[in-house]
Amino acid sequence: MSLIGEAILKVCEPRRINYSIYGNTDAYLHAHVFPRYNWEPEERIPYPVWQYASEKWCNPKYQYSNETHGELKEKLGKEIDGLMKKAY
Image (tube, rainbow, N blue to C red):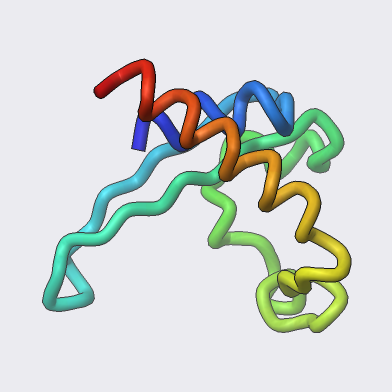
């Protein structure tokens, strides 16, 4: 998770990264990495991203598409690969 966070910090330049590891609802341990940005409304900054309105999670304009986000995905992948090579 820390390597993913490092890659996000370098490529996306967020304000900070929030990390969460859960296993209470699902029957398996899983993790989330949420970059937080300066463009977020000030009143949202102290709260977890999952408290955003459901519109933000379900609206197609916010969903991943390779056409819109493919270049960013590529940059993050390359950065993670480079960090993994250094770490291991």
